[in-house]
Length: 135
Image (cartoon, rainbow, N blue to C red; front, top):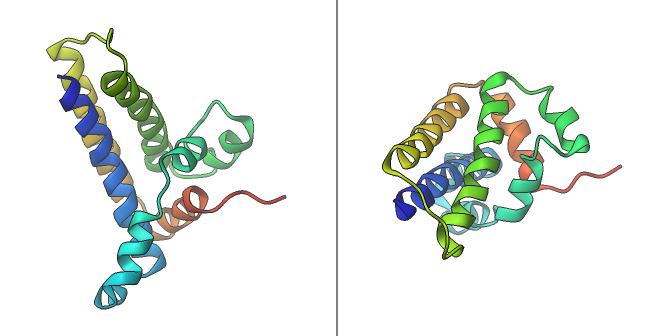
């Protein structure tokens, strides 16, 4: 069940990494596999978590301007990453099958919501998670 929770987070993470590469390099860029792969791999867990933190006033104000599907994705990304850290690193972490299923469903919902949003909104979100905010 720990592994299921961890894998749920990674499904969401890899969905975002894929869309980062697609937004920055694009489908044609897959021919130049090195650039597409480098962009895919450039997604940083910590930066993405920070950008998805709806509790952070600076990011909350930005996330509120996105469509609900992206807001839901950000919320689930942040929550799943915190749960994955507990599942992977806390020896006292305990869970149940029903809780693991809830996290799997959350990941599926997050991915569906994200992929159903307009590509221009996904590109804007990708910029938020890949690049630091500047004043």
